Length: 336
Image (tube, rainbow, N blue to C red; front, top):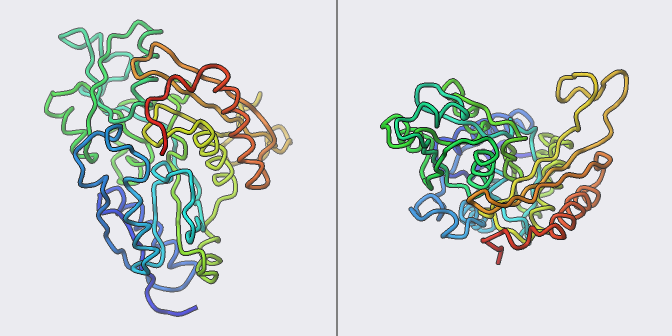
Protein backbone atom coordinates (compact mmCIF):
# COMPACT_ATOMS: atom_id res chain seq x y z
CA UNK A 1 0.00 0.00 0.00
CA UNK A 2 1.15 3.53 -0.77
CA UNK A 3 2.67 5.76 1.91
CA UNK A 4 0.65 8.74 0.68
CA UNK A 5 -1.61 10.31 3.31
CA UNK A 6 -5.18 9.03 3.45
CA UNK A 7 -7.92 11.68 3.49
CA UNK A 8 -10.59 11.17 6.14
CA UNK A 9 -13.84 13.08 5.62
CA UNK A 10 -15.43 14.33 8.83
CA UNK A 11 -18.04 16.78 10.05
CA UNK A 12 -16.62 19.91 11.72
CA UNK A 13 -18.24 19.55 15.14
CA UNK A 14 -16.05 19.04 18.20
CA UNK A 15 -17.48 15.55 18.70
CA UNK A 16 -17.07 14.54 15.05
CA UNK A 17 -13.48 15.79 15.04
CA UNK A 18 -12.71 13.92 18.25
CA UNK A 19 -14.08 10.59 17.07
CA UNK A 20 -12.56 11.00 13.61
CA UNK A 21 -9.20 11.75 15.21
CA UNK A 22 -9.42 8.51 17.19
CA UNK A 23 -10.24 6.58 14.02
CA UNK A 24 -7.43 8.33 12.14
CA UNK A 25 -4.91 7.13 14.73
CA UNK A 26 -6.22 3.56 14.45
CA UNK A 27 -6.16 3.63 10.64
CA UNK A 28 -2.57 4.94 10.69
CA UNK A 29 -1.59 2.00 12.91
CA UNK A 30 -3.10 -0.65 10.61
CA UNK A 31 -2.03 0.93 7.30
CA UNK A 32 1.28 2.55 8.22
CA UNK A 33 0.08 5.67 6.39
CA UNK A 34 -0.56 9.15 7.76
CA UNK A 35 -4.20 10.26 7.85
CA UNK A 36 -5.33 13.85 7.35
CA UNK A 37 -8.75 15.12 8.37
CA UNK A 38 -10.82 16.86 5.69
CA UNK A 39 -13.57 18.95 7.30
CA UNK A 40 -16.91 18.90 5.51
CA UNK A 41 -20.02 20.89 6.42
CA UNK A 42 -23.31 18.97 6.23
CA UNK A 43 -26.85 20.31 5.93
CA UNK A 44 -27.59 19.14 9.46
CA UNK A 45 -24.72 21.28 10.74
CA UNK A 46 -25.95 24.54 9.24
CA UNK A 47 -29.74 24.15 9.55
CA UNK A 48 -31.29 25.59 12.70
CA UNK A 49 -34.52 23.64 12.26
CA UNK A 50 -35.33 20.73 14.56
CA UNK A 51 -34.42 17.32 13.17
CA UNK A 52 -38.06 16.26 12.99
CA UNK A 53 -38.71 19.25 10.69
CA UNK A 54 -35.79 18.67 8.30
CA UNK A 55 -36.40 14.94 8.17
CA UNK A 56 -33.40 13.69 10.13
CA UNK A 57 -32.58 10.96 7.61
CA UNK A 58 -29.19 11.61 6.02
CA UNK A 59 -28.87 15.28 6.94
CA UNK A 60 -25.50 14.69 8.62
CA UNK A 61 -24.05 12.25 6.07
CA UNK A 62 -25.06 13.24 2.51
CA UNK A 63 -22.26 15.77 2.04
CA UNK A 64 -19.70 13.26 3.35
CA UNK A 65 -20.96 10.60 0.97
CA UNK A 66 -20.87 13.05 -1.94
CA UNK A 67 -17.22 13.77 -1.11
CA UNK A 68 -16.48 10.03 -1.07
CA UNK A 69 -18.20 9.40 -4.39
CA UNK A 70 -16.46 12.45 -5.87
CA UNK A 71 -13.02 11.23 -4.81
CA UNK A 72 -12.40 14.23 -2.54
CA UNK A 73 -11.76 11.95 0.46
CA UNK A 74 -10.67 8.30 0.77
CA UNK A 75 -12.94 7.33 3.64
CA UNK A 76 -15.38 8.94 6.05
CA UNK A 77 -16.39 8.46 9.67
CA UNK A 78 -20.05 8.69 10.65
CA UNK A 79 -21.95 8.35 13.89
CA UNK A 80 -23.74 5.19 12.90
CA UNK A 81 -27.08 6.35 14.30
CA UNK A 82 -27.07 9.16 11.68
CA UNK A 83 -26.78 6.78 8.70
CA UNK A 84 -29.89 6.12 6.61
CA UNK A 85 -30.69 2.40 6.61
CA UNK A 86 -30.34 2.12 2.82
CA UNK A 87 -26.72 1.76 1.68
CA UNK A 88 -25.96 3.86 -1.43
CA UNK A 89 -24.49 2.23 -4.52
CA UNK A 90 -20.73 2.65 -4.80
CA UNK A 91 -20.03 2.89 -1.06
CA UNK A 92 -19.43 0.27 1.61
CA UNK A 93 -19.19 0.35 5.41
CA UNK A 94 -15.76 -1.22 5.69
CA UNK A 95 -15.62 -1.25 9.49
CA UNK A 96 -17.78 -0.81 12.56
CA UNK A 97 -15.32 -0.51 15.47
CA UNK A 98 -16.13 -1.67 18.99
CA UNK A 99 -19.06 0.29 20.35
CA UNK A 100 -18.82 2.96 23.03
CA UNK A 101 -21.41 3.15 25.83
CA UNK A 102 -24.78 3.23 23.99
CA UNK A 103 -26.77 4.78 26.84
CA UNK A 104 -28.19 8.27 27.23
CA UNK A 105 -27.10 10.53 30.08
CA UNK A 106 -28.39 13.58 31.91
CA UNK A 107 -26.46 16.78 32.59
CA UNK A 108 -28.52 18.57 35.23
CA UNK A 109 -28.28 21.58 37.49
CA UNK A 110 -26.93 21.02 40.99
CA UNK A 111 -25.63 17.55 39.96
CA UNK A 112 -29.14 16.13 40.28
CA UNK A 113 -30.48 12.77 39.13
CA UNK A 114 -33.52 12.51 36.85
CA UNK A 115 -35.79 11.41 39.69
CA UNK A 116 -34.81 14.40 41.85
CA UNK A 117 -35.19 17.15 39.26
CA UNK A 118 -38.90 17.91 39.54
CA UNK A 119 -39.02 17.71 43.33
CA UNK A 120 -36.28 20.35 43.64
CA UNK A 121 -37.61 22.71 40.98
CA UNK A 122 -39.18 25.96 42.28
CA UNK A 123 -41.89 25.55 39.62
CA UNK A 124 -42.47 21.92 40.54
CA UNK A 125 -41.86 20.92 36.90
CA UNK A 126 -38.44 19.95 35.54
CA UNK A 127 -37.65 21.35 32.08
CA UNK A 128 -35.51 18.81 30.21
CA UNK A 129 -34.02 19.66 26.82
CA UNK A 130 -33.62 17.18 23.96
CA UNK A 131 -33.93 17.32 20.20
CA UNK A 132 -34.93 13.66 20.00
CA UNK A 133 -38.56 12.50 19.72
CA UNK A 134 -37.32 9.08 20.88
CA UNK A 135 -36.00 10.51 24.12
CA UNK A 136 -39.11 12.66 24.60
CA UNK A 137 -41.42 9.67 24.20
CA UNK A 138 -39.57 7.50 26.69
CA UNK A 139 -38.83 10.22 29.24
CA UNK A 140 -42.45 11.32 29.26
CA UNK A 141 -43.64 7.73 29.59
CA UNK A 142 -41.22 7.13 32.48
CA UNK A 143 -42.34 10.34 34.18
CA UNK A 144 -46.01 9.35 33.85
CA UNK A 145 -45.44 5.92 35.35
CA UNK A 146 -43.28 7.25 38.21
CA UNK A 147 -45.27 10.36 39.08
CA UNK A 148 -42.57 12.82 37.97
CA UNK A 149 -43.50 16.27 36.69
CA UNK A 150 -41.32 17.02 33.68
CA UNK A 151 -41.59 19.05 30.49
CA UNK A 152 -39.48 18.00 27.52
CA UNK A 153 -38.24 21.01 25.55
CA UNK A 154 -37.00 20.64 21.93
CA UNK A 155 -33.45 21.98 21.45
CA UNK A 156 -30.68 21.85 18.83
CA UNK A 157 -26.99 22.59 18.98
CA UNK A 158 -23.66 21.08 19.92
CA UNK A 159 -22.72 19.83 23.38
CA UNK A 160 -21.57 23.26 24.56
CA UNK A 161 -24.81 24.89 23.42
CA UNK A 162 -26.98 22.25 25.07
CA UNK A 163 -25.14 22.23 28.38
CA UNK A 164 -25.20 26.04 28.23
CA UNK A 165 -28.99 25.94 28.61
CA UNK A 166 -28.49 24.23 31.97
CA UNK A 167 -25.66 26.48 33.13
CA UNK A 168 -27.75 29.58 32.32
CA UNK A 169 -30.76 28.25 34.22
CA UNK A 170 -32.96 28.14 31.13
CA UNK A 171 -33.34 24.38 31.50
CA UNK A 172 -33.06 22.05 34.48
CA UNK A 173 -31.30 19.35 32.46
CA UNK A 174 -30.40 18.15 28.98
CA UNK A 175 -30.15 14.62 27.61
CA UNK A 176 -27.03 13.63 25.69
CA UNK A 177 -25.37 10.44 24.47
CA UNK A 178 -22.87 8.88 26.87
CA UNK A 179 -20.61 7.98 23.94
CA UNK A 180 -20.29 11.58 22.83
CA UNK A 181 -19.51 12.83 26.33
CA UNK A 182 -16.88 10.11 26.73
CA UNK A 183 -15.26 10.81 23.36
CA UNK A 184 -14.82 14.52 24.03
CA UNK A 185 -13.56 13.90 27.56
CA UNK A 186 -16.51 15.48 29.39
CA UNK A 187 -18.02 12.47 31.15
CA UNK A 188 -17.27 14.17 34.50
CA UNK A 189 -20.13 16.61 33.75
CA UNK A 190 -22.70 13.79 33.58
CA UNK A 191 -25.00 13.81 36.61
CA UNK A 192 -27.09 10.71 35.80
CA UNK A 193 -26.78 7.73 33.46
CA UNK A 194 -30.14 6.58 32.14
CA UNK A 195 -30.68 2.84 32.29
CA UNK A 196 -31.69 1.26 28.99
CA UNK A 197 -34.74 0.03 30.91
CA UNK A 198 -35.70 3.73 31.21
CA UNK A 199 -34.64 5.02 27.79
CA UNK A 200 -33.59 2.73 24.95
CA UNK A 201 -30.94 4.39 22.77
CA UNK A 202 -31.24 5.18 19.08
CA UNK A 203 -30.43 2.29 16.74
CA UNK A 204 -26.65 2.28 16.34
CA UNK A 205 -26.03 4.81 19.13
CA UNK A 206 -22.47 4.73 20.45
CA UNK A 207 -21.15 3.04 17.31
CA UNK A 208 -19.17 4.50 14.42
CA UNK A 209 -19.25 3.57 10.74
CA UNK A 210 -16.12 3.82 8.59
CA UNK A 211 -17.24 4.13 4.97
CA UNK A 212 -15.25 4.11 1.74
CA UNK A 213 -15.64 3.52 -1.99
CA UNK A 214 -16.79 0.00 -2.82
CA UNK A 215 -14.12 -0.31 -5.51
CA UNK A 216 -11.14 0.34 -3.21
CA UNK A 217 -10.44 -3.28 -2.26
CA UNK A 218 -7.04 -2.53 -0.71
CA UNK A 219 -8.42 0.13 1.65
CA UNK A 220 -11.48 -1.99 2.48
CA UNK A 221 -9.21 -4.84 3.54
CA UNK A 222 -7.09 -2.54 5.71
CA UNK A 223 -10.08 -0.87 7.37
CA UNK A 224 -11.67 -4.26 8.04
CA UNK A 225 -9.02 -4.85 10.70
CA UNK A 226 -10.86 -2.26 12.84
CA UNK A 227 -14.20 -4.09 12.56
CA UNK A 228 -15.78 -5.55 15.71
CA UNK A 229 -18.03 -8.47 14.66
CA UNK A 230 -20.30 -8.33 17.73
CA UNK A 231 -20.87 -4.57 17.37
CA UNK A 232 -21.57 -4.96 13.65
CA UNK A 233 -24.08 -7.76 14.29
CA UNK A 234 -25.81 -5.74 17.03
CA UNK A 235 -26.17 -2.52 15.04
CA UNK A 236 -27.21 -4.43 11.92
CA UNK A 237 -30.09 -5.99 13.90
CA UNK A 238 -31.07 -2.60 15.35
CA UNK A 239 -31.00 -0.87 11.96
CA UNK A 240 -32.91 -3.76 10.39
CA UNK A 241 -35.65 -3.13 12.94
CA UNK A 242 -35.65 0.58 12.05
CA UNK A 243 -35.80 -0.16 8.32
CA UNK A 244 -38.60 -2.71 8.70
CA UNK A 245 -40.61 -0.15 10.68
CA UNK A 246 -40.01 2.22 7.72
CA UNK A 247 -38.98 4.88 10.21
CA UNK A 248 -36.58 7.76 9.65
CA UNK A 249 -33.63 8.65 11.91
CA UNK A 250 -35.77 11.24 13.71
CA UNK A 251 -38.72 8.92 14.40
CA UNK A 252 -39.37 8.03 18.06
CA UNK A 253 -37.75 4.58 17.74
CA UNK A 254 -35.30 3.11 20.25
CA UNK A 255 -33.45 -0.18 19.81
CA UNK A 256 -30.61 -2.04 21.46
CA UNK A 257 -29.09 -5.43 20.72
CA UNK A 258 -26.96 -6.78 23.54
CA UNK A 259 -26.20 -9.87 25.56
CA UNK A 260 -29.17 -11.01 27.67
CA UNK A 261 -28.82 -10.94 31.47
CA UNK A 262 -27.15 -13.97 33.00
CA UNK A 263 -27.59 -15.58 36.38
CA UNK A 264 -23.98 -14.82 37.28
CA UNK A 265 -22.39 -11.38 36.80
CA UNK A 266 -19.72 -11.03 34.14
CA UNK A 267 -17.83 -8.30 32.40
CA UNK A 268 -19.32 -7.24 29.06
CA UNK A 269 -17.20 -8.60 26.28
CA UNK A 270 -16.18 -11.66 28.30
CA UNK A 271 -17.64 -14.58 26.31
CA UNK A 272 -17.69 -16.84 29.34
CA UNK A 273 -20.05 -17.01 32.29
CA UNK A 274 -20.08 -20.03 34.59
CA UNK A 275 -17.90 -21.70 31.98
CA UNK A 276 -20.51 -21.22 29.25
CA UNK A 277 -19.97 -19.24 26.07
CA UNK A 278 -22.66 -16.62 25.59
CA UNK A 279 -24.48 -17.57 22.40
CA UNK A 280 -27.58 -15.39 22.51
CA UNK A 281 -28.33 -11.82 21.55
CA UNK A 282 -31.31 -9.91 22.89
CA UNK A 283 -32.90 -7.21 20.74
CA UNK A 284 -35.21 -4.68 22.35
CA UNK A 285 -37.27 -2.09 20.51
CA UNK A 286 -39.61 0.75 21.44
CA UNK A 287 -41.85 3.12 19.53
CA UNK A 288 -43.94 5.77 21.23
CA UNK A 289 -45.83 9.01 20.98
CA UNK A 290 -43.69 11.96 22.07
CA UNK A 291 -46.03 12.81 24.94
CA UNK A 292 -45.36 9.38 26.43
CA UNK A 293 -49.02 8.33 26.54
CA UNK A 294 -48.50 5.29 24.33
CA UNK A 295 -45.48 3.00 23.96
CA UNK A 296 -45.03 -0.26 22.10
CA UNK A 297 -42.02 -1.94 23.68
CA UNK A 298 -41.07 -5.53 22.83
CA UNK A 299 -37.99 -7.75 22.77
CA UNK A 300 -36.78 -10.96 21.22
CA UNK A 301 -33.80 -13.20 21.85
CA UNK A 302 -31.97 -15.39 19.37
CA UNK A 303 -28.55 -16.85 18.58
CA UNK A 304 -25.78 -14.27 18.18
CA UNK A 305 -25.92 -13.65 14.40
CA UNK A 306 -22.98 -15.11 12.51
CA UNK A 307 -23.97 -13.59 9.18
CA UNK A 308 -25.34 -10.28 7.95
CA UNK A 309 -28.57 -11.97 6.88
CA UNK A 310 -29.11 -13.49 10.33
CA UNK A 311 -28.74 -10.05 11.95
CA UNK A 312 -31.19 -8.58 9.45
CA UNK A 313 -33.67 -11.37 10.20
CA UNK A 314 -33.55 -10.70 13.94
CA UNK A 315 -34.48 -7.05 13.39
CA UNK A 316 -37.26 -7.86 10.94
CA UNK A 317 -38.73 -10.44 13.30
CA UNK A 318 -39.08 -7.94 16.14
CA UNK A 319 -40.36 -5.22 13.79
CA UNK A 320 -43.13 -7.55 12.60
CA UNK A 321 -44.22 -8.12 16.20
CA UNK A 322 -44.11 -4.39 16.97
CA UNK A 323 -46.15 -3.48 13.89
CA UNK A 324 -48.73 -6.09 14.86
CA UNK A 325 -48.88 -4.48 18.30
CA UNK A 326 -49.70 -1.06 16.82
CA UNK A 327 -46.28 0.55 16.28
CA UNK A 328 -47.16 1.83 12.80
CA UNK A 329 -49.59 4.39 14.12
CA UNK A 330 -47.10 5.89 16.58
CA UNK A 331 -44.41 7.11 14.17
CA UNK A 332 -44.82 10.65 12.91
CA UNK A 333 -41.76 10.76 10.65
CA UNK A 334 -41.62 8.20 7.85
CA UNK A 335 -38.62 7.57 5.66
CA UNK A 336 -38.90 8.65 2.02
